Image (cartoon, rainbow, N blue to C red; front, side):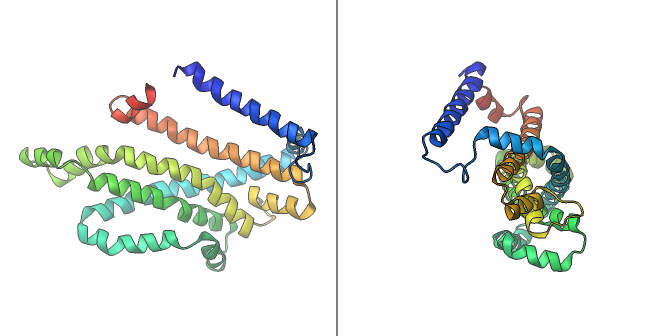
Amino acid sequence: MNRLTHFVLPLAMAGFLLGLWYAALRWGWVNPVILPAPDAILSAIWENRVDMFQASGATFMAAFLGFSAAVLGGFLIAMILASHRWIKTSLHPLVLTIQMTPIIIITPIIGLWVEDALFRIITITFLISFFPVVANTTLGLVSTEKNLLDLFSVYGASKFQEIAFLRIPFALPYFLTGMKIAGTLAPIGAITGDFLLGTSRNPGLGFLLLTYLNSGQIPAMFGIAAVACLLGFFFVAVVHFLNFSLLHAWHDSREGVEQ
């Protein structure tokens, strides 16, 4: 496929779905109270633009801080897990247990332990985002090709050189894959945390969604969904740009994307 096709096909599909949406409303297949028209959603976004803009800023800050902590913390935990087999055997089940505990159960506990509303949401975002980084980075660090490890050993490379110049570059695509997943989950974690633990002092998208739900503003609720989707796209786009910048010059995975 050429680059033009990559733009035309999604736009064509979006236009088809938009037409189908309007047709379903026009012919009475769907109740407009349940599924408002796209123009009603856009009008709701414009009418509530100030509140949505402020809430988006609060959610972005919480998502960014939680995502950054998840990336840094996940990388460090992965380095620890990959350093020795007995450490991985000892700690990996604990990390897995934290990840497997539903966030809906952890959230009230965080509400009891943490007083600051922003830090609560950052903590939830961290917990929901860090495991993909840990899992993928650990896999990359322990999957380094044995022949390359033997080569470094033959040339007398130190442990630090092995990690810095072989294991980390080899694990970089795995790490970036974990970042992509974490980038998708970070806005979800921030909005979920704000929905459950947010306050009116500095409301995010989750708290604003709850406000619209309680007041029956259905188009505005869909507007929140659209804004949240854009926020998620931003996070993923940044990670994709970072992925391209770091890998396109040397890694085979980028060659497959560019064809």
